[in-house]
Length: 288
Ligand SMILES: [Zn+2]
Image (cartoon, rainbow, N blue to C red; front, side):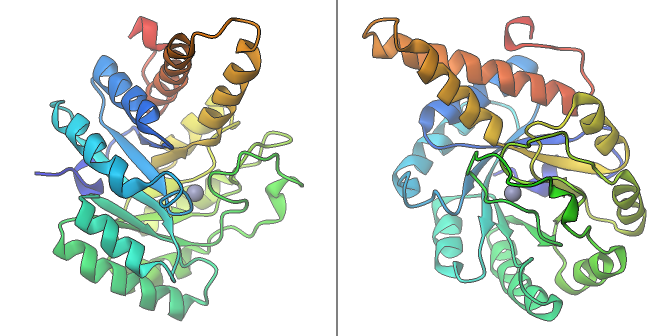
């Protein structure tokens, strides 16, 4: 049976699960290798904005095959599907995605509830879970640009609205705005831990934090302690790749070696994050 967010996220657990977006099979395999080395469940994400560019319909069968070869529970999640991407959601469910995020956070509450309900209705028929979002998370998913400004101006998710949203939609997980943003931060963001704690105490669903790249280890652990159960990490993987490309220019023409080196770097970053969210002392893939 395929693994969805309901199998992975536990509100009562003291740890969170990492969700890492990918752009190719190398990234997906790096995540799976890491999960196996650490014997920890993980979520592989594909952002809706990349779905067509990376030719997800061709890539996904290989990823699902790789997931099948491990004993570990691993979910395949469509990240940030927009309200006008219902066809993509349907396509993803048919391809075998086990989880969908519908991001209606830019819509008025009533419209966000309506589109989320529609996605929950179809996804649950496929035994796929749904992550909703309330309160916008700044920056664009999968664009590792530096934030123009400190994301402090973003309003935090309102706890009462969040409760209303979850009751009306029956979502399986909820992404909330707590001071983080997509992309690379100019300076350490100020996470509002009280908002996490308040919403967590009022809701039964696991909470999701996006924009983990660049947040300090201490803040990540505090976010988990206060109730975050799924953490989206992606920009750091893009940054790692670009650093590797820049650093490798002078080292010859062995492209395979370059790709292997890149996977090694990804595995190190991913292992660090998985361990951090799970409160494990492991510091790198090599030590796993
Ligand atoms: Zn996001």
